[in-house]
Image (cartoon, rainbow, N blue to C red; front, side, top):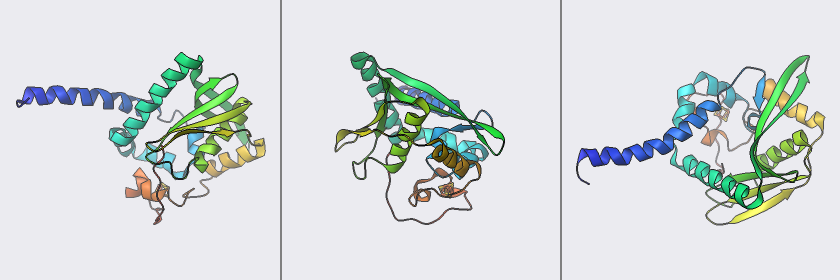
Amino acid sequence: MDNSNSILKNLSLTQTLFKRRFNDKKNHEKKDSNTIYVTDLLYCPLKPRLREQFKELTLAEAYNPSTLQGSLIHESVERILIEELNAEVEVPVTKELTIDGEVYKLVGRVDAIKDNVIIEIKTSKTDVGIPREEHVLQLMIYITMLKAQYGILLYITPDRVTEFHVDYGMSDDKLIELVQDYVYTRRIPRHDWECKYCVYAKVCPHKVSVNEGKDAS
Ligand code: SF4
């Protein structure tokens, strides 16, 4: 194991794992300006704009071991849900909304559905603060879009593996308000901890200083 060929062979495995993650990130690139991802509604509305402007920063994030670990756990849990529960996974959801005469397409991808119940899988370095407010909001949006019975947030953390039930969606007015926050770039940042962990903080003119911790994915 002391020659350069062995070292390169080892790196090729690493490259294979990260390449998959990198391609997933590329597939998430914006299609058109009137398409809004559900995840865009959960966080600072400036992020998707900076994601377009600074594509290299976005793609560099694919090489983050922590998020790679999270996505591998995610894929494993989805496989188990298929095999054990016959759940449908990676289900696309879409809803059209009109704001000030402009039609927007809200799109998302639900981790899993079983018997009209939505399952969202979350990984985190800690179980402190779960269920996170933004994850509950995401589930509420999906419940509303799919008119689902209820939803489950399944958390996989080193300290705890547990689930939280969310049995309410939201009104169309509330959903439109969230989309308006995004369209009109209101609430920058959306959470007081956000800038501290934001990949665009290096270039963002609106960055604010924060003290709180956050590491859920
Ligand atoms: S640094 Fe803060 S304000 Fe700027 S994009 Fe990130 S979260 Fe938003």
